[in-house]
Length: 217
Image (cartoon, one colour):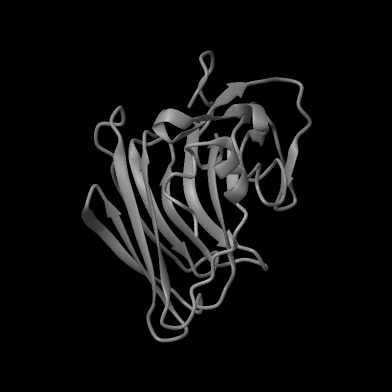
């Protein structure tokens, strides 16, 4: 389990998190991840992920397609795998100050260790001024809920409760600022191992072109 004060010291961070994605530096957007774009403010127990526009990077490959890399950015993932056991569950809770500018694509999510799916987007922002809560049972069977993200300049608390429903399926309840937003079901998710990722991806599903100039975080 990840302690609430995991970002209060480098040693605590190192005990529970690694830099980058579990599979490396690239994924499905225009950011290439590197350690230099992750910072931790120990006194406030705060993780900050940043992105800077770059040029001259070789493209990424995802789904058989090449993706231009236009940014270097920050991502971390938990060392622990999370698997909802029969009769069990997890709570994932954090406070976020998230950008909603077109081309910024931060996410707080779970994804399969072995193959894909499952995937649960505990919170995702896709440059539209909204926040998304999603559960992927397959690439075409997706439960998705987009709602307005109020006052992006303020902190907002996200809570996701994962619970075994019937020794096969996982129920997910998504809360923002203490209010239930939506409930979804992950079919056959019980016992499936998942990575926990916090990342600042860019462009991709959040639109192009992404922001120029000042650092995004």
